Image (tube, rainbow, N blue to C red; front, side, top):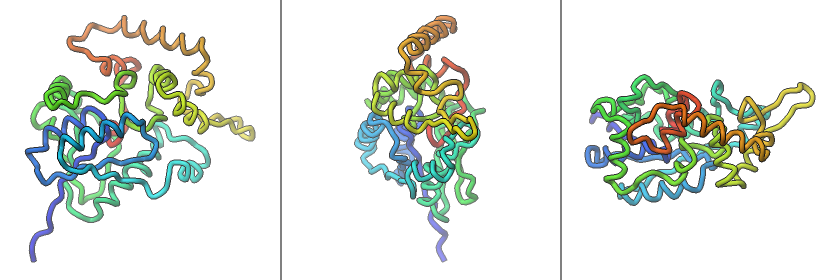
Length: 266
């Protein structure tokens, strides 16, 4: 009996690192499958960028959808929004669709963790038939290499990087306050949708908000928006000058280390 075929799968998030890895691996692994876990809660810029990636790769990017929409799981979790501790959105909307697509096949999963962030950890599948590999770490590629790969490919960065440091859902709880302001100013309709998910439970006195420090209603007040912008500029001025630093770097470094979910934000 012939040995079972091993599949090679690269998950795209719509962000810079996974895109650069797809470009980097395109000719090295011709049989690569490209997938995108589509939560249905993504920014329009993400879909536009995926179309560009697909054209460059010359292969379809398989869109994997969850078995139920976000609102279904929000109801199951009794209105408790996902947060850095529970991350139920990653589990239900990203990991499960990926594992369903993989099934019981032997799979090599390509992850875009760079050599300059080899210590980074996150929530990825632990199924025994899925083996994770890290080409950037193995080959010593760092952040500047990612920018070089994207520039040379002609893909560049997705448009949302002008005001956001991460891919993922428009309401991602890992967003920094200045990025919520960016969402408010660039996509006020999505900001309003995110705001509608927040609620106050009068019975328990508990608030369910995306940001533990304040609600989006509080954050969007003009005086608060101005304060956030001023604090953001002040933090940037206090940071050491970085050679070739991009807006994305500055946004990402604004409020500390990024502990976001690997499968969402690589």
